Image 1 (cartoon, rainbow, N blue to C red):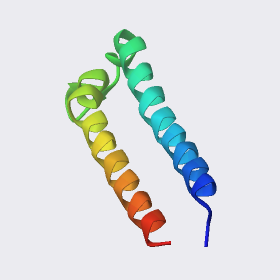
Image 2 (image 1 turned 180 degrees about the vertical axis):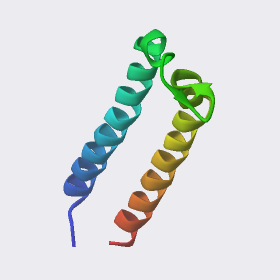
Image 3 (image 1 turned 135 degrees about the vertical axis):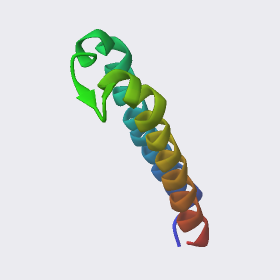
Length: 76
């Protein structure tokens, strides 16, 4: 059985990983929006598509991963 300190350390490490997976794509889309406008996906500029659809899906996946991981950790 894992100690509470070990569980807390694993939780923090996973949370930081998810935070970085949130921060990097969000920063790239916002910072490079003008450059991404030259690329199109399904007729829309890539920056619009990523901001309107792609990043939203990424955020939902990150929340799902967090919930799955926390449920797994609580069962241990």
